[in-house]
Image 1: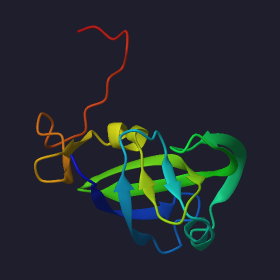
Image 2: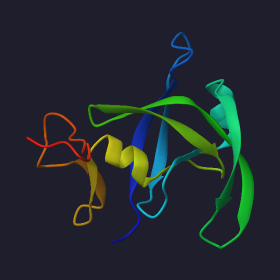
Image 3: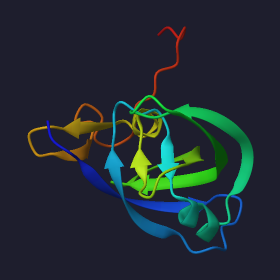
Image 4: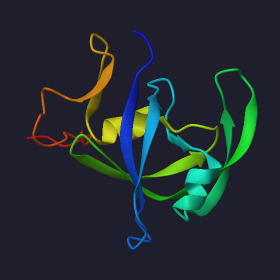
Amino acid sequence: MGIVYTDLRLGNLAHPELEEINVTALVDTGALHLCIPEHVATQLRLTPLQQREVRTADGKSHIVDYVGPIRISLLGRDCVTGALVLGDKPLLGAIPMEDMDLIVDPARQKLSVNPDNPNLPLSLAMGVRK
């Protein structure tokens, strides 16, 4: 499939007066969370909520800060989540992608809005019947 990157706009929901920032993130469907470098967390003045143990692709475990609330905007969609402070480049994982109903388009090597739901993100609420 190749490596896919996407441009994101990140903001601190608790401090809307702060300017949002633009970053380019690696799209990783094998990761769960948004990961941001320390300098991004500092620039956005994100509050550490707790520490989490994280296992990286190389099998190593790390204790990292989990910060938030962070707003992610891209492709006309938004979500609010937490982020792991890890690495030297942003990484967009599966949870925020699912929250915004985005898909990886392998043919064009890019992130896209789910074509089944082009106008609004679809969310599944288990146990709800029509």
